[in-house]
Length: 561
Image 1 (cartoon, rainbow, N blue to C red):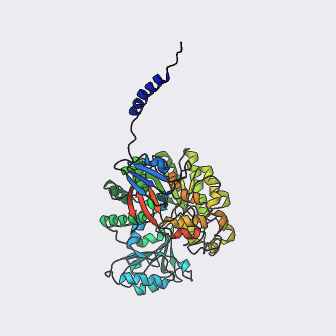
Image 2 (image 1 turned 120 degrees about the horizontal axis):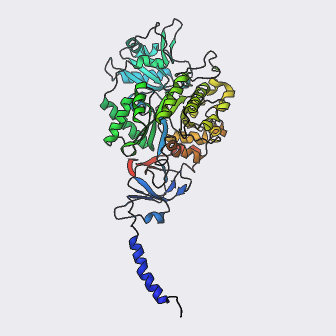
Image 3 (image 1 turned 60 degrees about the vertical axis):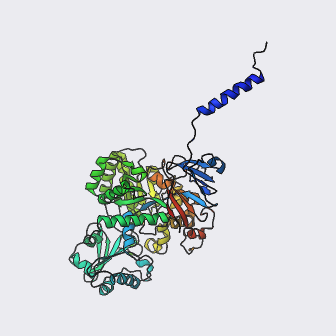
């Protein structure tokens, strides 16, 4: 007698079993949003290119084929046909200044001026519609673009604006020009002494020329009336709108005061921030004591604010010859730049940060500045051994060859801004001479050691548009495609690395890689729709790309007109 069931009995059993199994399986909730018919660069190596993705509850739940995404469509699902457009993860500026951009949008814009006369003309235009006695603030002048690259003196500006105190910040934020009225209010005279970490430029008689380097600018800045809280709040909202229009969903704010951090948190609580904001606490003893006692805080207010990093300064900038060099400037043989912080201070804060669980990020541009920071970090890590600290050097522009491998060896991240290279390449050779240029903006040399490079703009030093840094990363050329072949072209990034440098690598540099940086299920649904494919078009067309839409948490925060 056979023990096998008959075919009829088996079919009958399956007919009962299958519906029961299906009924026992929970139904997959429908997606809130499905984007389809797109060329999606995910920045996720497990599936780098897909044609569709789905969003639920503000996070990605699927990325893959259109057929699979359609399974998640429900009665209330919004379906967006991208029309074959390019989609990338929401971009993040890895080093910028939130309040600085807000202030710049309300100040006299001096970026792109080709002469001192043009600077004065823009200030005079503002003065004509500003009540007498009111401060006029501007930013963006660069004497290296004026033909005569000497620093200006205040006399022409003072003569043109006798009734207004004027303070004009250099493009790099490491020098400022004050007119006579501003210097009078600051009691700045020939007898004034240089502050620590700063320098008052003087004429042959010892009188101030009006140019103040690094911390000397604070002598005048301290006299400028602070904006009200509501004025600052409104300016910050304008800054966020500007970022969204250019495809930025987040930024790393490189040095914020406690007052500003409180305001950022208040805006986030009220739902008016709409930004992934990774905050670096400015170097202030009281602020550091306050935040170290609180401990690191991450993803506050539905992933809008992170407070778990500190911003220090080692030196100044190349454009104002304040960056600290191991050997003198080639065009200023008696000058090796300025150290803005004592090495012992950097080490002390680094040790305290390690004990409190905070990341330490230090501005260093010159080769001496970078070495000082790496030495201080190394000593701190020897005293407080810590795994996965992710300390950073902000800028890391000029490196001695011996120091390039030390970043990977120490676990330090070089946070660099590609647009600085294309801004500086016209004159940096005069500052450094030919030999030191091989360690300048050395992205590929660093990448080959195994580090990642979070990219950014340092706005308002450079323009906000992140595609400027993307273009600089892959071409090392300016907007006019100069120089032919690229400036030290062997240091260019691949397009894949350039995309990661503006998405996944900033997320890693901020301990956010589980929540941000790629179009991966489980991460925040932040993405950008572009009108052309930056991963395939010729490099010279990248800067013609427009952002069509920016989404934060699956919701549109910008749509092109």
